[in-house]
Image 1 (tube, helix red, strand yellow):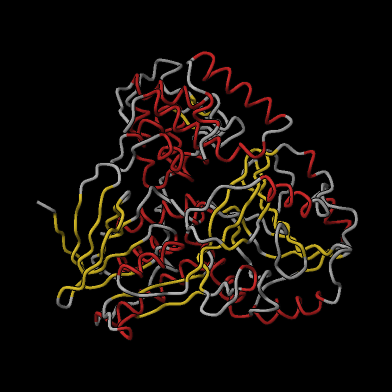
Image 2: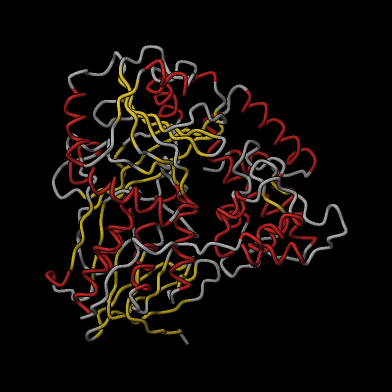
Length: 542
């Protein structure tokens, strides 16, 4: 018999906006469930350049968006500090750029409330030695880099702490209006079990899939997926975000993250929300566009490339760069569907504001008089310093801050796992992923979560396999550790290895030249030569 559960609000879509909405609902005391078709940060929220916008990119043509960005930038740095690296940013003018754009940009920053300080180019190049000597003007702005995976995860943790429920790997298959409520049918994509949720309110926050969800309710909404490709370099050749000082275009943003740098992005209309495979043509084009800012760009090793789709709201004929990046909240009661809401468009930087606006609309519909507190409530509760100091002796990591920042509410279970191991043994909690400093205790603790079904799930919560070797060494170590600790995944060990390598190789395939080609040869030697896996099986998978 199919399970039916009841709640007040059901959120469809587990990206930053959906999870942010679940958090807002939960903080306001509204019982809420979220259904996400994939794992954590399955869609766009994990497939972008990781820029926490200052608003400088929008200040000339869209003052409102720029103002929203700088306000939300400040809020997120306060409530989500574990997700943000306060890098600051530069806007740089090159000979190819129109100098007449600069006065309008300065005025736009002033109107939006963005602090933009012009600094001497020579001083800027002392701070960022790899920058082009051809730069004529440069401005400092409060851009930052943000970890999209972590942002979604920490919002989910906060929502769950306040009573919200997250159902990962639950795909919506149908929507029905029954009386004054909605019956939403779901299938668990891992177990194939079906369930249904009865809710007073349904919130469509499915991003690039929003149009598909809306169609299930009989609506035709103008949401167009727009594909963007990005390049990850195995170098942090810039300590700051660096933007071209010109109207927003392809390949004009460099964002540092940890030890790497991301260059993005392109803008190509697509019919497929899951069109996430980069092409070599796009990669080569991005390199050509980015080279004027960093003249040695093509000599840097590319770690991988990836792509994601933006959910653009396109009520007119505009596409790509011409389409608005603003967000829209819809109460579909005017379409004869009371209790059905949609939120379209927007940027990750404004996800919290988007969640606030749609939750305000839901509260008005439900007659709930509760203020939004997400701007003042930290996502993760700070851990006692003494607890962290005690934990140091159990971890082979010089600085636990990396673990503390990414683990969030998982930290206690990770520390407990480490403490349960033999403290007398020097190798009781070995490093499994040396690139990202991920130890056995962290992997074991995350692997035992009910939402973990694969190495990819572990990767999204720990960064396993996301460093220099892209899983060449740590894949085998991780699977071996799981087997030795009798922790099972959805697949047998060899299948798990193959699937994980397939996922990693998707982003490497179109960048295999130079040192990256050498590493792929090493990868083949380990997994095809030693383990006798079929190299063609993962090398050809799209």
